[in-house]
Image 1 (cartoon, one colour):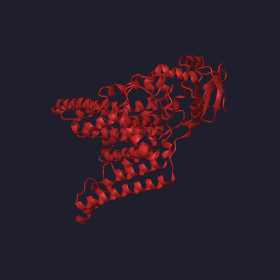
Image 2 (spheres, one colour):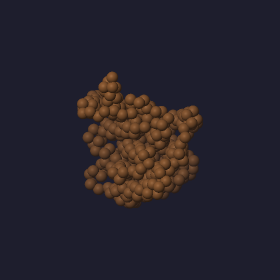
Image 3 (tube, one colour):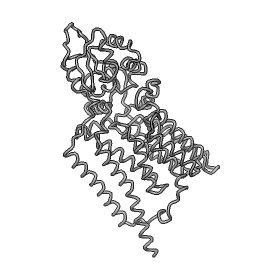
Image 4 (cartoon, helix red, strand yellow):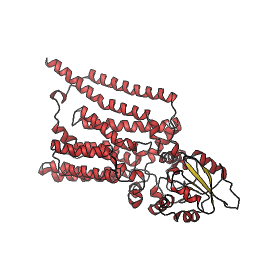
Length: 497
């Protein structure tokens, strides 16, 4: 009977080892099959364009050369490694490449998340938390660098929390994670900021005689993490570049992903907040001061900026993992198991079968499906006309900047808001959205604009229809083109149908 129990424990242990991989495979296939929904942000165009430039030149950009309003000004790419990966995948498989890369990023995030939670709570609950986190973040899953950095963020915070739970200092071997994060995306500053409160969790629960020594070890680790974050081709400038976006002030309130959460209608995020409050009251969870601070900070970030909801979704469960694990004790047979070589072999074979099945599904789907970018971000016909007219200075909509960059057309503005600055982009929005229509003719004259390319349903085209010296040259459901009645050189421009 004891032999039967031991065998059962081994089977459970090996089955649990496959749970993160199964979750990752399921998440990968889901996002791959809905891959067209990942191609909805025109920033993907300029991210890929910059990555291709890096591959072609074997160097990293230090100045802007895609706009005519900021040409030659200092600008660095804090997501250069992600851009290179996206550019390479796009060159190999067209838009299927970025879709696969994004799906892999989400799969790794879910797998690492379940693996870390499984150390504290039962696998079914860990999987449930993963599904809830994915539901909260699905709105921001796009073929962009932040997705490739997401698994690194989860691993970094999960490992720090695990060290705090053990009342020990993090291993120096984890510092390369921070270096990788810093090369993938500017969000690595969050990982640096969280070291402090997580270290307090470890120090608070350590034995009194060990607290000072442990605190100093965390301080040294924090210094090491700061140095690791500068291990990029740009050095310390990466840290400065990553924080520039936070200084855009009012502009952050008009860029969708930086807007505060909106509770005008019920959302999954609102449900998560209510559920978190209900769980606390129902189960009476008692948390230490550092854990409370971490949850409040992540909640505040998510309320302040829409894009921070993904950090809330994946990191709050990691902060709560140990208290929840103590509340929901594992069954006795689930606590440990044997580690015999036949069991390891079966696990490895199972893992290979899951990976093979996922790749086979990918190949079969790619054979008959062609991924395409959403049409609302690609004003192809309007851009064709502008190239035919040979205009040099185009006043383009903010969301069209990435597409124009992909066609080597100099832009007035694009998604690199930190390059243009708060005043410049705010003046642009106020002029084109009708808040200060008198700004529009001033900007057109100040920057010697030859033609405009604006969103069809925005107020800007209607303002231009009434503006003397401008004619509507093209319009469709996506974009409207206006041209000066006379371009430079005095040649008349005839409107096109």
